[in-house]
Length: 284
Image (cartoon, rainbow, N blue to C red; front, side, top):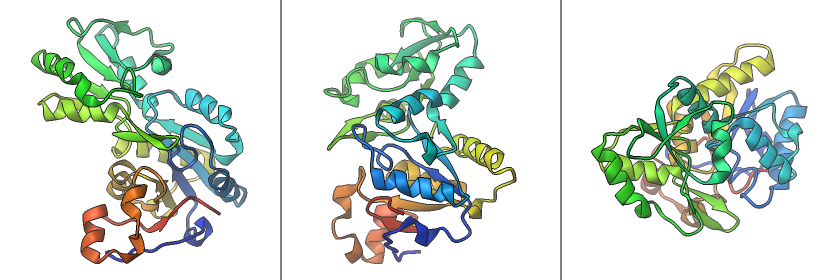
């Protein structure tokens, strides 16, 4: 497929769809404010009998994500459940009791350890690294962590990335995420495990929850993913075998100027595997 379909309404894509797996940051909110029309679209899909699973690379448990959504006045009524990369990272920590971990991330991500009683240690004594983000994502980039990652590589420490995103919107700015550090570590020859989109475990968990809420098995042709990242949302949906509605107003907004004029070669270069459809912002 090299033809791009631009749509203005979510309801035009829902024939045969029973489940929506929606990204949060960039689709439902931008970190500072919610998008009312996107929230309304998901709510209407649910009211019409659909199941909405929010699927996010947030490096925090689902209940912490929910609290953030409530602070932004996003109603619980727009979704059935939340799956976060933080949840999957917590399962890794729980499966390795007694092993020393070096946590790299801001204090606000501390909930990722809640109830796990992890053995926190210095980089020099750790058995592995959990990376939830940059210590100061307002001023730092991944390059600030090159010396630290070189020391970690020398010790051959596995790095568990709790947020594969490279960047995310915060208001009208892009800030770096844990994925930027993880990709640097991988470039340096370090061992990295990613939890979250575009990797399969988060989709498999979302499908389990969707089936539980729907009360019956869900086939992949009944699922529509929604997201704003080529690298995570679109690649993840394609790899898992589900359709994707791509929202262009997010982190790739500058690249989509004149999107309707793209030739097939440019479409392939930009997307690799084009989405089912494009929409500037999610609307019912």
